[in-house]
Length: 200
Image (cartoon, rainbow, N blue to C red; front, top):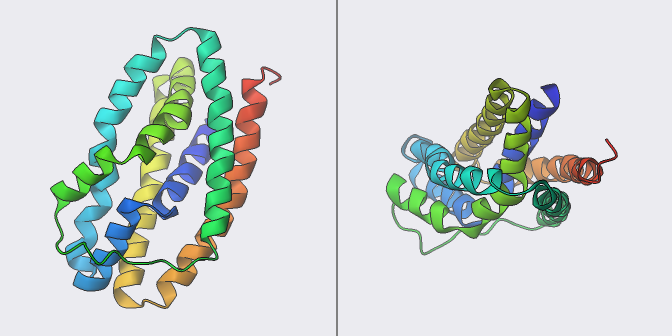
């Protein structure tokens, strides 16, 4: 149970800080409009992920065990890839998107829904871990989701406040989190590969 909470927390932090369309949107809006107006956008992943998770849980739960093993290996490789991306991004400046002009919760939700990153994450990593926890107890699956979304929302809120109040502090904070997340992701990626191999 503690392992699921830790994995959910780490993956939530990573999902919140890895560069992508949603993060660029969040940072840009916070810098332009302040934290009060931007704060609702911290809920975008929770709104957009629900249909993604439901569809993938139905699909993946019907697959034979050997397919789940392959998905487990793919998820481990994907986590190692995210670790590499997080480490590389930690030394690069965050660029704002000049095309984003207004804050719109619906727009942010739709943007994240059509973004391939959540689909890849949940199909290769999130849903297999979720089903693993559910097989032991529905509470274990809930613990994973709570850890994931509490961590993601917390980091999103922190980024909104930091980028809205002090542009110089925001990138340093973000880059530090990315380095820590990269190390943790690499460890969990290796751990998932180890578990998928059937040795544990």
